[in-house]
Length: 591
Image 1 (cartoon, one colour):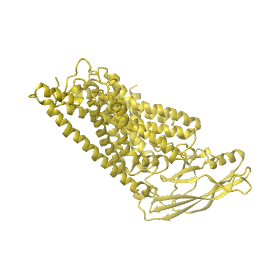
Image 2: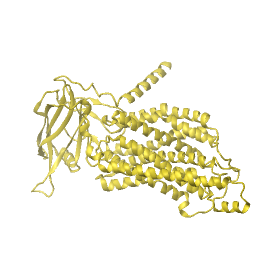
Image 3: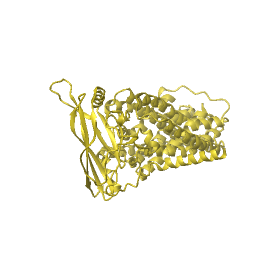
């Protein structure tokens, strides 16, 4: 039994190291070749161009199949989750060796193959290859005008011309052009051919991915303008919050602290005052569903740190280069930052008198992962039904579960214990009264629901333009690389969210409504609602996606993203409001 346990530990250690290193190591070598060394052309996937997630195995179409059992390459957890399956095409390519027109295979067409190819051409199927970790793309075929038919003539490209640029012993750039279109007719024999041309270049290996980066798109003037606009919003909101703290509250403190006024003056001041001071005996009352609130605040704090870490790593490590590197980094960093969620949640739950800390710990550790697992399960079922590469293999599911069960969950447990013991003592400035104060009816715009929905407008406005670039990079084949922009926008989002939530909390307390905890959370979290509404607009106006499969994946992935964004913003809003509430009640007399 001991040997079995040690073997399990070694396996998990190797697995974790593999996940950490898979995105940074070269796939099969150090990317250096000698003359006449074999260079592998990997085929990856094929699918409708307008539906980025609807991808299938390249050989799901009746292309020339390699003989025997061709090699497969697994580049890491993120690559598998991204729907990649690299298979050796067995096409003979050697470093620095030009290949004139050479036959890959003789493709004999029958009715079934013709139908498959025609369906693929009508749906604008494209395919993806890789050579030395550099992508090549091409379309399966095309529709040419046909004088004898109302429909176009389906033609299949039968020749692939591969151009490779190299610098000394390293491949710098690859390009694929297709020629020799042939009409699709049953019973016809097509010669599928290829050629390879090698050219020398002075571009260094470090800059070989620059050709895939769309500089004019991401560095457009509107991108800079959006940053400036958001920055001005930050200045306005911080000024507004400062005015509340420095003027309104200072005057309120001065009135509230006067002891030498006569009774008539004091009664007049009290009647004229706003009501935030009148609820000092209830403002620190524990909120409803304290376990859930603690869990989402802890999870949101973890997600905020996680996003910051991933952005910083992307800035320093060019993670966009590796297939699935961002996803791998996100999963590993999420597991390692689980201590933060437990610490924040456990401390908050204990400070508010919570007793069922085990329930709080389990909910904190499993809330966001299980929501993602639930959405992922539905999408995976759809992908399996369609036979798509987007379907996650069972082994990959086990790997993700093991990471959660053996890394994330124990760290969340440890964080909860530390949070309870180190920051779990109650420290409220005002004592909570036994009998809750009745909340007077106020105008409709001061109700928690309206405050919550209005709270997300300005944070959404600060990230609106960046959402367009993020959505376009994910759904329209753009490589997102301007993580410096993302870092600025993320910091602006945090500041705007805190400021807006503080203002909303102040208005709510002035309305003598002391249920500010959930209101502050939802006020910030409503940002995600506007992002999701924007995603609906983006789907119908900015994309050409179609079909149940792609629609499900688009709105499923977007829902997953918005849930995380809502929890993150909600936690930031609550924590900011919590500091604000403690600050303003610290200097008043709490009788």
